[in-house]
Length: 121
Image (cartoon, rainbow, N blue to C red):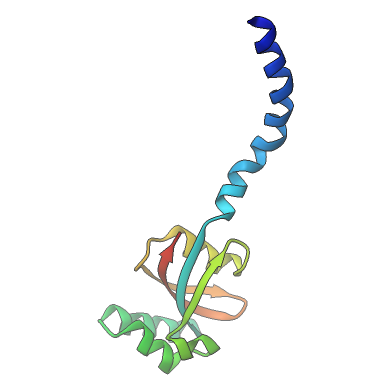
């Protein structure tokens, strides 16, 4: 029995060492997020828009009216995306907050975003 255990370990130990470090990354990359956003040029604009949303205005309606992104046609909806598809600041918000959460302003190279996380899978 000890010989079988030694053969098992001799066979699987190098595989474990090879694949274990990448397994968590692989599983993490499988996650997807869905978000809507409103993109504006200044932090002041973003704060005013965030206040409107926090006061009860519909996110999609506000996005259609104020966002400078082409996604405004869809109420700011960006659809489903995986890790590495968005700029890091945006991605962090999308993957670290629960669905329904509105976060902002978030500064990126494109301007200031108000982000609504709408799903994760």
